[in-house]
Image (tube, rainbow, N blue to C red; front, side):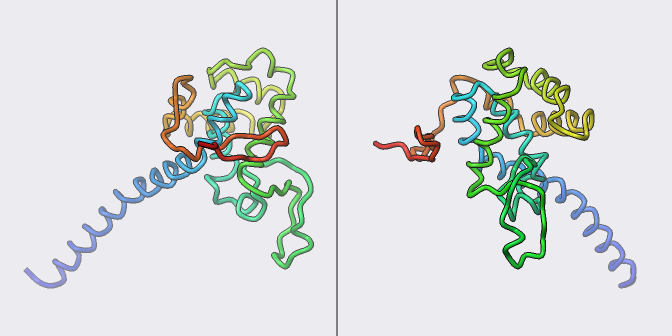
Length: 190
C-alpha cells in the first residue's frame, strides 16, 4: 500500500469525523443558550402565565441563539423595534431595533408586549405552545408567518423546552432572579 492511499483514507476519515461533530456543536450551542436563559424564562412564565417554552423558543429563533447582530449589539433577543444608540457610536451599524441594557430586560419587554395582546387573557396560564404560536402568528407577531411557527416549534421540540413549562420545576440555584416592584432584577435574599 502506498502513501497516497493512506493519505486519501485519512482525509476521508477526517471528513466523516467532522460531519459527525458539526451537529453536536450546534446542539451544544442550543443547550448552552437554554441553560443561560432558562431561569429568567421560568420566572417570567410564573409571573405572566406565558410558557417558558414560548419565551425561550421565540428568543432562540429571533436572536439566532444570541448570535444575531441585533442581539449582540443591542441585547435585543426578540426583534422588537424601537430606539437605540447605535448611530451615536462607531459601530457603523444602523438599526430600527430597540436597544436593551441587558438580556433580562429584553425578555421582560417581550412578556410585557405579549401580555398586552387580545389573545393573552384567554391563553394566560395555558402551557400549550402550539396555541400560543398560532395566536401570536394570527395577530401579526412575525412577518414570516408559517415558517416562523415551524422554526419556533422546532426549537421547542429539539431542546425539550416544554419541560420548563411544568409548574413543579424548581431551579437548583440560589441566585434565581426575582423581579422587583420597580422592574429591576433583584437576587434572592437568604
